[in-house]
Length: 142
Image 1 (tube, rainbow, N blue to C red):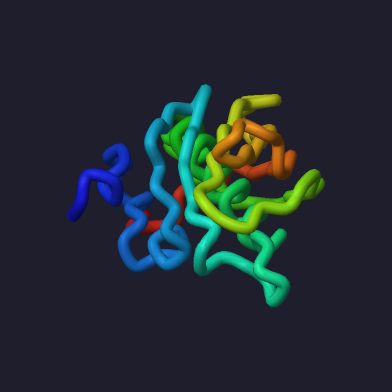
Image 2: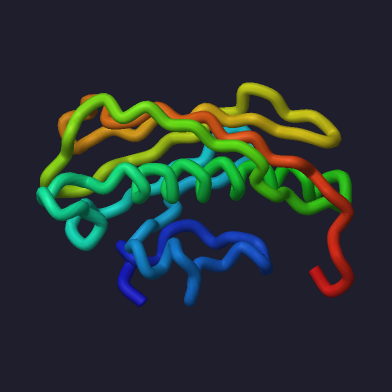
């Protein structure tokens, strides 16, 4: 595994291998309940006009908010499941990488909400998203 692909070590159950994160080239570089950071290549994640697909931005945002929520939920012996996401796409990106930074809006015992800001390589805002997760009892074996 290359250093670029390695990212940070996530807890068991949050490993990216074989998941959508892996398929989309998302690399998590920082992960705590208070701040989650990841990069994603634009190449391979575009719509027919060659622009970053809005759905790809939503996948990045939901992934970051879910990771932060799961890290927070672990303190309560719970797991996090997404219940709402919304996103505003501000500008188009054609190449390079985007970076997503998720910070908590609310960290409770039953729900969490994160704001996710996605920027391009010039540090221009591409997308702003909000994700809310519900914290539930971990199913057996989780």
